Amino acid sequence: MSVQALAMITVTDKDTLGAYREKAAEALAKHGGSIVAADPAPVVLEAAVEAPTITALLAFPSTEAAKAWREDPDLADVHALRNGGGKSTIVVLPA
Image 1 (cartoon, rainbow, N blue to C red):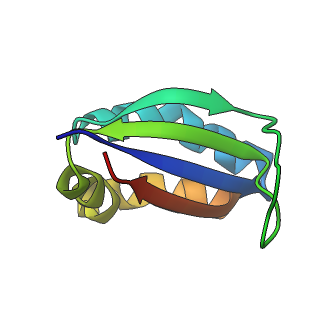
Image 2: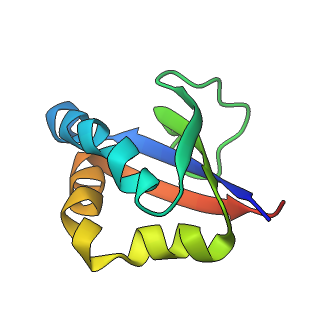
Image 3: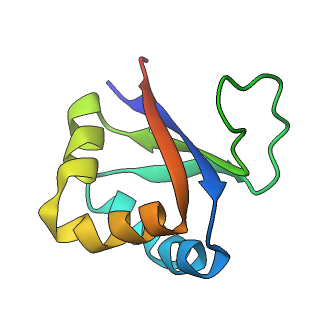
């Protein structure tokens, strides 16, 4: 069963996040993931913490695949770019 994940990023370093964006799709694909939609200027209706400046809806074949993408040691440098370019929260949504 496929699942989706919502990635919310508050950009702190545009250049570093730009380097991440160049590698993100390939890193996702390694675990069957893809970008369904992305918005560089999301309309935030409510935020308990700092509002994200970028959002993306991701798709994975399963929750396990999403976890494997995040925990893959071969992708640590890619995740480091994302975290170096902003503060991110990524939440898996049940199917």
